[in-house]
Length: 68
Length: 502
Picture 1 (cartoon, rainbow over the protein chains, first blue to last red):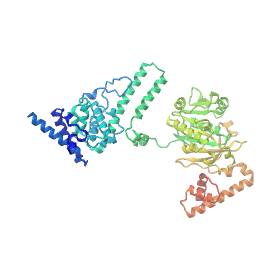
Picture 2 (cartoon, helix red, strand yellow):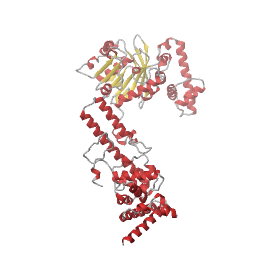
Picture 3 (tube, each protein chain N blue to C red):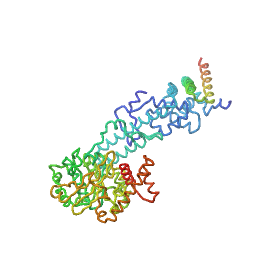
Picture 4 (cartoon, rainbow over the protein chains, first blue to last red):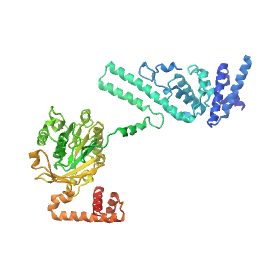
């Protein structure tokens, strides 16, 4: 879990750390919509996808906090 | 996004071609496919054969390309990873930015509909491709720098390329086009006769018999009836007079055929004043290819006479069945080109001379493909040389009740009146076995043939008593079990005779 958190599924949090805060917000919103649609259509939710979304949420929260 | 929809997007033409009109596309379908892949990466398998270039919007091509890249690396495909992949390669801006990519999650399609969306995207890509190819064809034609044949060949190749790329799944593009539509059923004309109960319109018929047994004279007589109307031999009313007859007779020289046309009084139909009879004889050169555009053009709206069928067809002449296949294909092409009928003379094999009965099998032996496609077959046998008496019997009648055998007499009537006369009408005339003079004259053989026939019919009568529904094929097998070889046509006749007696 620690490894996934650092590099979840090949996704590099460091590079996305360079994305503007608005981008992170778009992606987080979109990912949440995707999960809702997957549940709606009976598609399985992947654990590492949920992990990445959690990371997005925490990154977004940290950035917002920093900006505030 | 909407302004991009009107920009020309060349689909790999040799040089960019501008088309000043909106190109066919459906951005919603493209977005739905990308959204479906985000929902379930297995959707990529469904669109495996849909090239990235088939997407109209360049942004969508970038996104799909990166989705496929992630799949190849066995990485998860979701918004975070796709945006990350685009960003790392410096393509995020070209893909519309993270905002645009994230909006793919809005209004998610059902994953199960992805094939439907792919079909829409493919259809639009085909139309765009076709428009560019057509424009390229137009440019080349207007440039007028090559031979027309080369330009046409090139055009055909370009269109073939479009057709070849038109499928994205195992389902061939436009496969339904291989079958008749309901509209075609509804608008097609009913079965029509050119000559009632003798020659159907829009179909092929044959006059089959041994060489020198009067087939060409019969065909001249039929041509006369088609040109003049009235009644063929007083037996078969002409329902539609011919607009034109195309008579191809590569076995006969022009002087000989001219003599026959004069005999039947239809020579003037070949004159420019009339123009309803187009003739090509041996004197004009070898038999033409029936696929020749000149022949196909002339065939439209015409009755085409092939005298004889053996001289036509592309198949191997030394193989009867191969040749028959080629001929069947050519005759079909003539009918497709709009021929009102194709009437072919067919040389029966020499073995038919020994037959005391006439059947489709023995007059067409070895040419089953040809026999299968024709709607009507008439067998002929000259039974009296001196008076030119020809015995005629129907051997195949698709969708109609054929008349009983009959006989025509040519001498002296063709010379005196320009046509055959009926010697024995249907109902007065027996089957060939009863009418054939050599069998009549050699009393033993005739007697034997009649005895066999009577005995065989008695067998069938017994079998019918056991099973009223017995079919011709069963009768053939039952005879086989008795060691008697009987063709299915003969079995059918025996069955009819036995039923009549019953």
